Image (cartoon, rainbow over all chains, first blue to last red; front, top):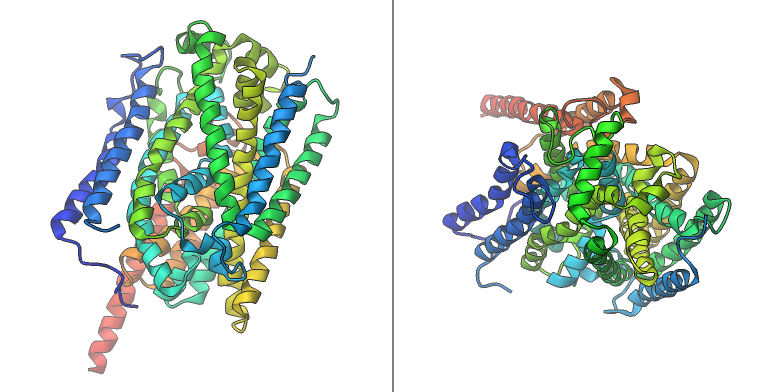
Length: 74
Length: 515
């Protein structure tokens, strides 16, 4: 089974994309960083709102990664 | 007690349910294609753009697990269950990398399932059969979980109206499933896509409405709720044991392994693959997948509503009517009826109800695809494309009713418990599917042994040590300190890599001897 489907993508693009996809993984693995109650936001402890905020951050990073990985295609 | 949902609420619930059913059947006429072809019926002709894939896969992946199991877990055990948030943030990184590659292979060779790919990649119908069987089995408790979620909605809606809630809700569920089976049979994934957009709209409406209404219904909203939850945790032993304001340190390993294991597992589930393969192009698939963590904000809010409910005195009063083990599943439906005006509560309840129906349809469809493509076809190679589709359509009907029958027989606690076991076994297909996308050099026999040992070890760890603990508020790890799926996967991967190394050494030697 040959891999004709894999297209040529520049190495630098692959590296940058890999880093972008990995950032949320690294952040969430660092549990002590966000496992605390303060500062609160609207009565919600840090543990909850900061992880929720990172959902949006993750999405932004992934979208940038996709545009780098698929340049100029529709 | 007086009913929680009156005639107005029931009217709106049923009226909008009729629209849902119409959309399901209308799917057959939408973007017409030859529905006797498996890829037209099961993948909507692979023609969905970025936003439709987002709505479809969002509705497909954010299921009763999101609306019922996660809030229920936070309500009973506390912060540990917030692992669902890092889970949905990171799983889409894996999906954005793997699914477009699988999509390209599938478009090229007309694959409909991940097992189709494994069969060609490793030239083994047996390995593909194992992967397919694992997918079919793991999907059953997931469908059952959807039904448990729908039951929770009906329980709240029928409270104070009928005496025998169980009988009436079972009857209502059976009718809902007959309708669902009928439109899935006729419209396939097209029907699921249209109803998915409808579901997503209701879900977002419900989640945002509760967020907006909370400060009015509960003075002090989240501040009050977190204080009340802390108080409840200190007075009731075992309640919210993993922490309220943040995660207690002994649960750190469980938290991390639960989200890592769940993130690795999600796109091994057949229904996730099925949704991904319906995209129009690899870039559109990647883009819509990258946008899916945004949907997770709704999940995060629903998880926090598991705490919010502690501040809502009327809701806590309603929950106290039920035995402690049944309360968790009712958190979101109860919060909807106590904080929202009746018409809005009815729409939110319908959101949770169809929120279970839409994924159930796609799950049964993806099971049917695996059955026909990777178990039936290898045994009857002469089957025509039309015959293939006919078998798949009927199998999707049968699978739905098997899951329904399962829920009627076993208690709901078991459904959630078995869904966890499903996660452990589906994870064992990772080396064949995800590593297969990266390399074709893995040895197929090592993959089979790794899979078998992973399965055996996972099931063994799950049933042996602390079966009573499996039903305690900390059931996700079944009494272990780390998520079992991750342990079993580590052993599985080790076997695959070492076995492949040995196989390469032997083949390398024999070829050298021959030359």
